[in-house]
Image 1 (cartoon, rainbow, N blue to C red):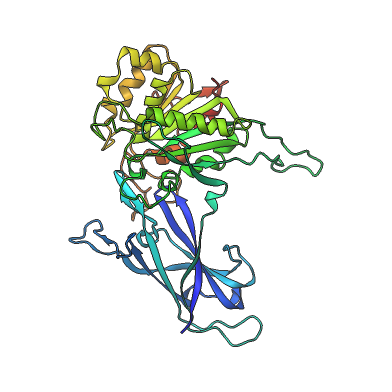
Image 2 (image 1 turned 45 degrees about the vertical axis):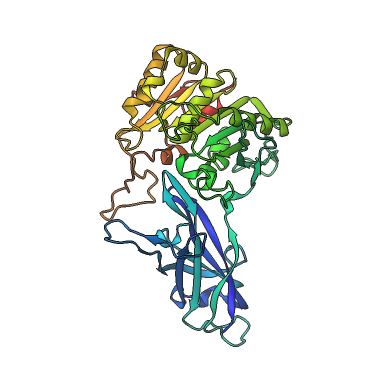
Length: 444
């Protein structure tokens, strides 16, 4: 029996990257009308970097079991080699759901790594060939041809050219398309809309789970795919920045809160402050003709939320705005001197009541109040809890799926942060805005 090749399509979702489509490479052309989802059996074994099967203890289970099994096929149709629908073709796309076996990352908020989804697809029913040739039967697809991810278009990876304090940071970045675009519903004679010659730069700092850690064999992709940082490279957020904004995502070797003695202490100091600033400066210099230095935005989640505050404190005249999400910047470090420095940068905090890892009563809430009392521009969106607001995820009883309250960055990436602590809309020129729309309006 001959082995055939396949490709996977990865979707970057609110709960991490997952395989949403499997593209089978057929030896002959077939018709969509002859394709049945039940004609294929899909088995997946999730493997660690060393090739061994991942052992995982699911919620409610008494012991860890191999993370492997069969995946249901939701839909099947002919397509091209990237999964785009066709009426006839030499490829078949199998759409699969978001479940444990299709997840591409394993771990938690303190550490994670990519795993290999080792897939074998077996054809269980014959499929007529479109040309009248012999039907296709008994095919097995177990050779991975490509891993596709449309959301990573125009994303690249690199590393800073020279270390600072013995530290060299790898990073991912998104380069916007500066080509003019036609406005939606434009008439035939409508001229294209020009984009700015120089675009804003959004620096986004990942959480503790997306640092290098033990996964030294990986590149920095996990820093912007472990959570849906790629939302910043898509609409509507790009649209707020006149259709073009750079996104820079450095990856930390340990944790942003690492002060050289404790990796996760309460000092709110970091050995990465100078290296990170050097990386940002280097990136700006490399793209000086295309970056608007009056519009440098910094944001981050959890560990990266701390670093967002730290960078605004240490470089008070550099960033146009900061958006710290569930940031552990503790009360004992909120000194008058720190408040004075932070007050020079407009800040928008995002947090949730009942955060299991970062208590807002000891971090964001007092910091916000101190800044407001000092006359600084500060906003804070404060959620009662974190549950799905998109309508995509449901509990068994049909109610919105609830997740842990620390994961409030889900709302940040979905552009759901629009109110201040008092529940009123944040306004720019009298109009309600989201946190990203507000950030796009800031200038240094």
